[in-house]
Length: 278
Image 1 (cartoon, one colour):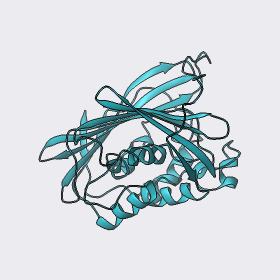
Image 2 (cartoon, one colour; image 1 turned 180 degrees about the vertical axis):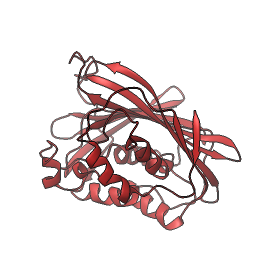
Image 3 (cartoon, one colour; image 1 turned 60 degrees about the horizontal axis):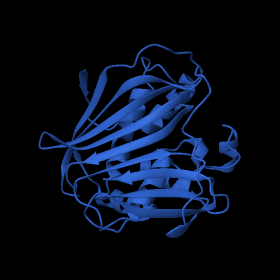
Image 4 (cartoon, rainbow, N blue to C red; image 1 turned 135 degrees about the horizontal axis):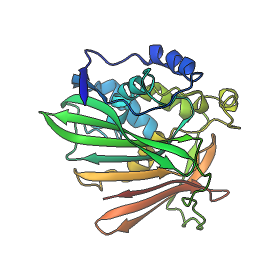
């Protein structure tokens, strides 16, 4: 793969209009082999604190395992809005995320961030691909994030991934406020209209605004704070959107040396997130 080194983070303000315009173009073909790299990244303590408040983490110098995702997000958007990317960014659905950290990261770490796309494959409802992001410290990969996206269309229309089980008894119930999409969008840079307001969500077929998938993962991870090893893997599937506002049930149980957890609607039991920590 060809590594393109950047001198500064890509501007999301410039990339989002490009994403809207590119949604009108028909595309196809293979995934690009570009790797974007951004060296010399230092953590802004105020930004980290704002992220922790929105997601429910304590205010410490340790980086939550989900935090580097927001740092690599501009690199991901730059890849998905490039002319050689086979799918428009709008309409690509985030269906899963797997984060592996080799050690805990802290406010004092200087990181090199990288992002590339891989593993284009068929899915019963269309095509899937993986956005792979990495954080390196001292030349070694210390954090890896694999975000799986689904591009609907052209598949068989069938899927065996539906969860018909009754939800477990919640160990906690959380009220998710109407403005969490706007607040998380502010700290993450992900200002997709489906997360911001009921009116803009309706333009894309959603009756209400929905929470970011990565906010739901971070909120679940915050519930385990202080109980996880430095090196771990947090793997989730985003089942159904979390409408705003709402109340959700959270359930966690030990599994081997790790954990299994779920997030679901309190009123209807609809599954939102299913994950494991190991």
